[in-house]
Picture 1: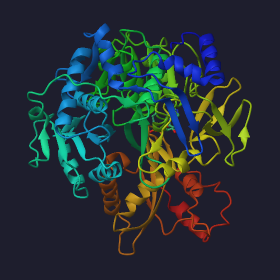
Picture 2: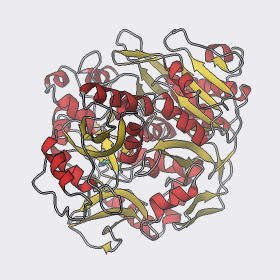
Picture 3: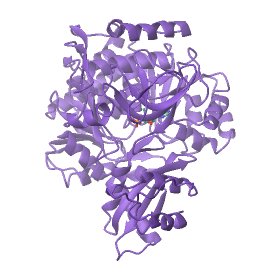
Picture 4: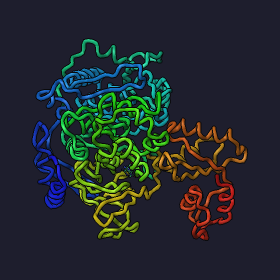
Amino acid sequence: MRIRTLSEYQVAYKKSVETPELFWDEIASNFQWKKKWDKTLDWNFTEPNVKWFVNGKLNITENCIDTHLETQPDKIAIIWEPNEIGEEFKTFTYRQLYHEVCTMANVLKNLGVKKGDRVCIYLPMIPELAFAVLACARIGAVHSVVFAGFSSSAIADRLIDAKAEFIITSDGMSRGPKAMNIKEIVDGALDKVDFIKKILVINRMNSIVNMVAERDVWYHDANQGVSDECPAEEMDSEDMLFILYTSGSTGKPKGVVHTCGGYMVYSAYTFANVFQYEPDEIHWCTADIGWVTGHSYIIYGPLANGATTLMFEGIPTYPEVDRFWSVCDKHQVNIFYTAPTAIRSLMAYGAEPVDKHNLSSLKKLGSVGEPINEEAYHWFERHVGKGRCPVVDTWWQTETGGIMITTMAGVTESPASFAGYPMPGIQPSLVTPEGKPIEGNDVEGYLCIDYPWPSVLRTTYGDHERCRINYFATYQNKYFTGDGVYRDKDGRYRIIGRVDDVINVSGHRFGTAEIENAIDENPAVIETAVVGYPHDIKGQGIYAFVILESHAEASDDTKKSIIDTLVKEIGPIAKPDKIQFVPGLPKTRSGKIMRRILRKIAEGDTANLGDITTLIDPSIVDLIRIAAI
Ligand code: PRX
């Protein structure tokens, strides 16, 4: 399954398009299946209905853990670096990981968790987070990891949508200089949720927490005397592996569903090839496991390849701005995979914090989450990679499960700010907004994918119609990504950014409607319109135009109260960068907000607002424009 040269890539790509089933059959055969599949692929993009490795039986944890016990039981699977530099780091060999996962799996079983049950995991980046994810997979429970930064209200929404009756959390967490009692945040979610059967609590901080008898259980009590062997549940290829919530252009975040077989094959295949992983390399993906990048490239992809994966509890700037580089040096990291927003924020401190450390172990660098601007790309390549490490700019989405368009380290090449070529198996196409195909090269359009790949989302949990409408109904027989893209003369792709009402703030996705609805919860607010605007560090910032109730004062206190509302409804990551009070919003006669105008104002480009004659009240535009921040 390994591609090592450009010509091997070309051969693999051709084969993957001409005979996709044969292509994926061969790759999937490298894994351990309890029963081989009868049919490689069943699909249509109209319902949609996609099934890979039909009737195949497996357990992903046997591929991520058990197989390595035969060949490399004492190899380190996970290196865990804590938030505080004074605390010892931890390592877990594949054998230790096996026992940790089996123990937690048995604890979950004892608590009553069964195959198919949804388990919400709300944990900081501690080893138990990886164990919890894998323990769920071991027993066939569906994990729904919620980033430990979301608010009680956001947790409640996700619990309700997934009908998750079990929660795994911790007493507290520390991330950078801040410490928090996160059990309290979970407790806050339960005001609206009355169906939780058990909460398993990991002791991370020795904090005093409220434990409800019968329902809340300490992990260190529950694992006493529990066996550290647990047979892996037999799963169908198409059984759910996990749900992960992500924002779209409408409504509340939706639960993207990935299934066992296809997701395993694709996350492992892309990890091996994109990063050109070699045995004994240490891989560090700086994402949080609360996001898809952490699922695929901290846990499943690396472990399925028997790699050593590093988990970091902290943030890049704590205790000092050189933390990333000191961790690379300390653990002799070979593959370093991070986000442009982190690079841009660290760039601001210059090269000195990087140069203080010996980064000679680094061999490959990666970027993910948002377009990487040329300046950040070159800084990363030059100061971190010292000009000798290939940088892969990997484009993909929660819904795609794995990397879709990218260069492969040292195999294919692309200029800065280009994601590059499609991975084998990925058939991108460009369309006009109206859906007319755009053929040829040196063209720009909306990015679609024309053929299924093993880890395409299967549904959005509990609402298949929403999945169809969001991704498969805009353009017939195509998966629509929501991104705009440029294809250059050599067939390489450069991602321009979202073309829908989704904004990408520091690599985190938000729907404008989601933020608007949250702000509208504030009693001072009548109506809100939110747009993204270019932000030097975050990629995009959040700009909110707010109409206040007549009793409310257009003051800093009201702004603060709006920010508090957002933190309460979604979490601190959704804080707006700018709030402008406006007397009205530019609406068309059908009542639609003309966001195009607001976007221009937010960008500071107020001279070219285009045609505003279709607005009910064009004069409102001048009032907003004059007062723009
Ligand atoms: O707009 C694209 C952007 O992030 C979106 C997906 O967000 P999410 O599901 O949260 O997943 C992020 C991590 C996989 C995409 O629609 N995006 C992601 N990677 C890139 C990117 N934009 C440009 N270049 C990338 N490498």
